Image 1 (cartoon, helix red, strand yellow):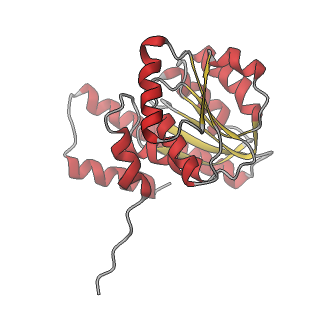
Image 2: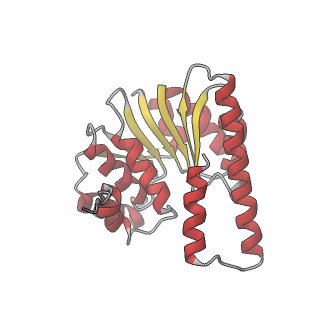
Length: 240
């Protein structure tokens, strides 16, 4: 008898829902957000900084629905020209009851937000000073043992610089992972161990190698064959 591995919910359901939503989220990043939200226990809420048309919101909301149905706060200016699309995509995914849009810049919203956060996803302004302000205002609201995820931490200088210093080289994070595309994920702790810090630096090296290799290919205007690219993605995940 041949055994088969059951397909993951993200692959069977979520991927098809987000396929036609514009956004810069790889499948690996979307699945990571889904699984992080699904694992939330309800000790805090989920906060997303930067929603645009809701691609990452749908991943977070459906992950939450598959878990403890933790509320998702979607912080974004939610300008009229795109809020209609955001609402349509959230409604279509069946998560409107879980998602609370907050029409605001993230820095201003932080001052009035007093809920404990179990999962924080940051994909707002990519300017260094504003990313740093997001970090300084929002990460303290994340509970010990909670998770943070920062998007665009490879090719974009602002997030890359903030995360490099404040996450990979910090004593407040462990279980750091680089997700194919550009996302850095880490668990917040009161104080990590020497072993945690060594692993964090190792993952930083993996991320840097990915960034430099991808940048070199882009400069040469070359694309890897799809089978080679898929193998590379699997290897990148395995070596972390």
